[in-house]
Image 1 (cartoon, rainbow over the protein chains, first blue to last red):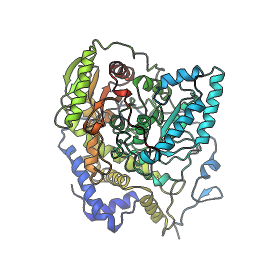
Image 2 (cartoon, one colour):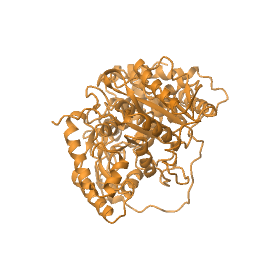
Image 3 (cartoon, chains in turn red, purple):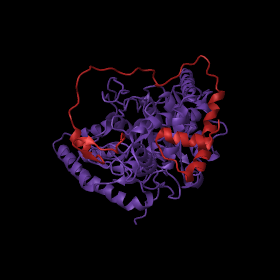
Image 4 (tube, rainbow over the protein chains, first blue to last red):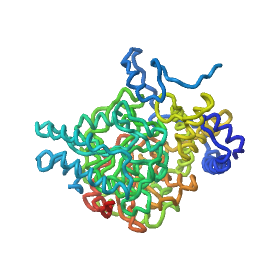
Length: 95
Length: 487
């Protein structure tokens, strides 16, 4: 499976990572090299084999639906790029 | 003193022959001397470390010491430590002072250990050479023209160069074992779920495991005792009865069955590595072990499966880096989407970006089944191979790396070439099995070779036993590189 330059651009969009025009060709070549490596998986016979997400097949632990955390927003927001009135500031999205 | 093991240092501290302050100062001096030539550390804060050392000395004075009280420990810069800059080797977190402690850091703190500094690493733990760090490459203390391995290269180099008696690392596809092998130190990746990942910056959540690096198996046992324990804040943390990881160290090896996978001893490894590894296996046989051939038929699929699963999980985990709540934010952007795109393009290095893009691709519509789900099926095949092999042997042995250390810059141009460093290590991560690397000789250029031992689930004590008995009969693990030149 070979990626086109447009595929790489689209992946950049999906991943929210800017891939500049200058980088595009090199990134395409490197990604295709990597996909060549992982393409070997296609040949594997996995008929009847269930996917394995967790090494020991454990399921996610559940807990009581109770409040256990204290409000530490001041501590956590002390390292934020832009904060005002306890809110994280980002560029306006809706006009 | 700087050559001493953690066990010897603990004895010396308890007997008040040396203080934690003296020990910590000696390490800090060594670190400063070696920083220009090795670049093993990203952050050092002598005042903070010495304050911890003073507190440890007070505990020692009151007779309230444990096995790690007063012992300086270097921590891979992937562990959040409250009040310490925690960068994960990335520009994205160049300004991130962690507001909380990782569970692992808490445990060392409770044990009275001294946080010596934060070690350099491949960015976001993605790499096998510690060259992708935003803070410059780490160098191998045995020959600084060569890489220390990665991604826990700073930790491995620090322990090898006697800058620290021990260190922490993380291992997702080999990142403790391979640098341990390339630097001539001992390192262990525990069974998945034993060491809490809370506060351990996430790369691939189903593969990441924190573990210790030191200069002996006995020391690894002491460190493992401190690191392992249930943590409700990590949803994959296992609740198990407390173990003494040193309990089997002295057991003789008579009756031990060592499995040699035919797939590991084929064409993949260099001759100098083969010689050292086969020498180690012969030594283990002399100590009473029986050697059996086993088969791990899906070995060849482990690197491809890993390089689908790990990037997929990374693309999800690293989506949190958006410039909104912490870390780097681009200074110029047109709108929110642009802020995300630019922040992430600026904050991440090339390898991290590549893996995010690969991960995004294999999870995307139309490719998810063919790549990601297929990789998870192959994962089960690989795990099943080990289950079968462990019916015929107790421990699997082989190389940790196909080569000794390579030159800085040698493999950076070709990602796939770099990925192939991982051929012997990724299977243990995919299967969740415990595995370690211990020094077993030297290869070309006088560079270290590591013997990898892989155990069944929760067989850490057995692995440490085999390693300890080997280290009683040999002295590879005591060899030291030349003293780094002061700059």
